[in-house]
Every structure is written in structure tokens, then in C-alpha cells.
Image 1: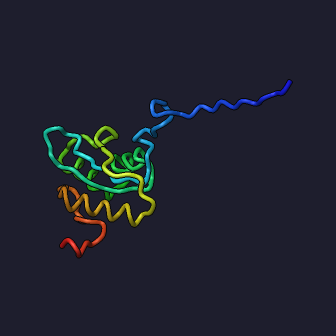
Image 2: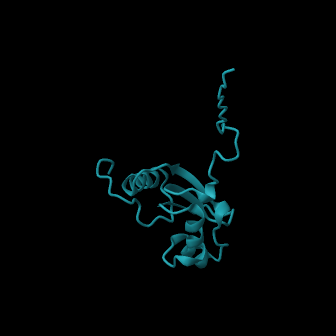
Length: 126
């Protein structure tokens, strides 16, 4: 009698709950944030190498230079929180690529709270 070893591997499929990282935990992203006041149309585009939830907390209270925080203080609108953020770009392999992407999104969407207008000067498009 011969003994046979059978290996049965199971691959985590597309339907698995382990497939996707929750948006709040994603990093190396470009994000869009809207003012928390639904009647206000002000918005902001930014980039971060950190998790989205960390950057959202910065915009909510830690980063005193945050244009989103300044807007909330100046207008007496509610401060932004995680539900006001949306990931618009992800999977960047370098800070340079992430900042170029941010500049392109700013150029295309023209968010009113972005003072810098772009992260990198895109002379090809100016």
C-alpha cells in the first residue's frame, strides 16, 4: 500500500471579508474632503502617506494649519470627520507619484480650500 499526500489549499477569494482594507485604514492615498455643513460647498483635496483616519483627525483638531479646520472655525461650521472624506486615488509607490496625482486632482477639481493650488508646479499644464 502506497501512502499519498494530498494538499488542499484554499485561497481567500474576492468575497472574503479579509480582502479589502477598510478605507479609514488605507494609506498612500489622495483624498477629497467636503465641509461638514451640507449647505456649504467648500472642499479640499490632499494627500497622505499615513492612514486616512489619522489625517482626518489632524484636519479635525491637531493640525492648526489645516485649511479645513480654519474653515470650520471661521464659518462656525461643524468640524470635518471621517464620513466627510473620500479616497480618490490610492496605491502610490512613492511620495512623488502621490503628490503629482494630488496636483492633477487639484488642477482638475479646483477645490476652494486648497490655497497651494497644486503640490507640484505642473508647467506642462500651465
